[in-house]
Image (cartoon, rainbow, N blue to C red; front, side, top):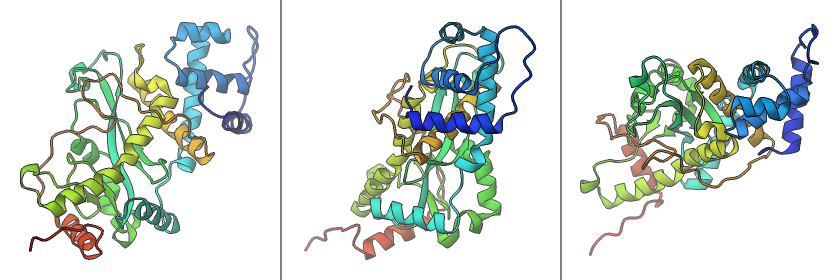
Length: 324
């Protein structure tokens, strides 16, 4: 298992006290909460088939599926407790951590997407075929300075552009209607070049052939700060190797539940200072990082980014040498 014993025991204790046990009606003895949690974590940590998993835990295939389905649903129910948007003092603390790490003020998170490879779906398969000719589901996440997810969305097929994934997400809707609640003090998120720039989302400068020295330095700072997303996805996929590639045909609903439950469990581990292995996961796609880099989009709303650049120049975070 790729989790500390103390973290696993925490899950067992919570599961034991929060789930009503089913009534045993003959047949094999009912599985204990400990065995259910172990079975779920083993499934998440490896790419073994249900048949092998059933053999290892001495249960039927249907029992293994039932346990994983039920435990993942229970872990998702903990999402409101462990995947939380930073508010009030939490937002201030997050901003301070990012500023200390990267010298850019105002950041409370970085956003990115990653492909989760799946077997070819039975319906609408062309929607799930990404540009690397693999079938996948997109996981969008906002990541804090501590590599914790503060928002996740996993509903869009792999062929979609990051910008469209964002615009269809609940995060975008809330940012439009509850901007001052999500982004007090004019805080914002960092995003890749495939995202739009607006008052709460700052993307890098893109016209590489015509960038000024100050803009290039800004992009370097921006890129370093945004690496927290890659590191979070690395941790997620290294710890829960099931997410590197789903090798069996499952319903999309089941697959999404597994992915989201892994995100909740990732945050539970971080909360317990259980960081696991941070070796970089390269994935099975050709030339694809954990953060998807689609083509840059055209957007005229660059005012916020330009103000930020001027602030960094004024406070000499970005220093441009002038020729005599």
